[in-house]
Image (cartoon, rainbow, N blue to C red; front, top):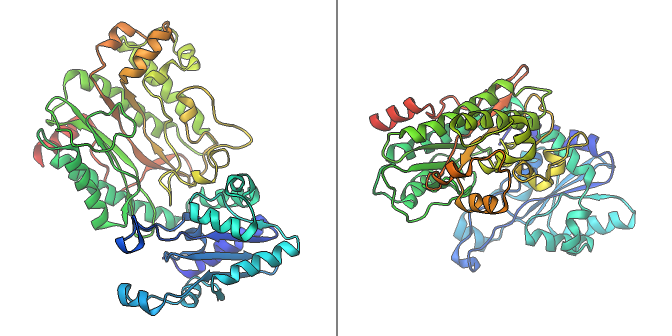
Length: 465
């Protein structure tokens, strides 16, 4: 937890931005596995609640009364039966004082607060809920059906939270660096272990174990697969084979709940083939190019599209694409090979704040999401600012079903060499990903130690470790 003044200052700034009414920030509750006495899924506090109230205990709600300049931490103290099983914890009053909140109250008080505000026709601000128990609570408190809660969420509050959370402070950057250090250990551990004969499941489990042993847990479900052409290829019981590529997309969430997110692709047997190197070198060039062009004032959409142009140029050199590069990219032909965006915001959520609405988080009045296949998966397009943390994750994928579908439709036949593409159906996919901080004049990688990714460095690491 940060110093309590950090949370107090954040809440003060939030009041100024939202201006009037009552803000309710719901913390998360425990989620039982099958039934309560059978244990719980790992608890994760809501990120916005954490940002403003800092406490990780379940069953808490933060109330900020802007008009009366008051704050209350709502929650029930645990009883003696829970203490017997789980040990003593701080009272809700103690938790409140730890983050400079002067008042606390039991959960039943929240109903009265909401009823009084409604009687006075005061605006009650809440963020879009994503858990069913929270949706039921909002329905009980405010009478809004769960189907209408996303549309009823406060746009003023959403925009204020995005404005505050999108630019990371030095304190936050330091925490992300810690998460990146754990991510380094996760990925290099996987590289040491990877060899023919082991299962994807075994390596993936080892990666997760490293995150759990050094931080809170993984920042998202670990991807480890020989089928890199599958965007979210969760580890299976498939045996790793010599001559194949393994793709590991994994990140850590540290003790302050800040995240890292990296991807590496490397040969199962430790040695790239010539064909693998040809594709890998294109992804490597695109990965490094983003670092050259990303800086404050530049649209992230333009960074993405410039990377797509570079990728198209280099795929043309291999004969996989053809025709005019600009026409190919504008038509979306490059999405055969890169059907996702270059990267997304990162912070307390690995896809930072996206639950608040992509239109508010990654886009704005200047630029809205594309509807074109591939480009529509770009999570952020707006102008970069100092303090943004973005992922830089270009990739090239050979997806047999997509190849067959586009070829059958005759899509982009002026830009794609389908005959040659047929010979790559068994290739898989390659992605390289690192986390970058937008600085005053440009950007830099986050993490003291960068996970090896240049081909010679990858091969040397795997040979010597």
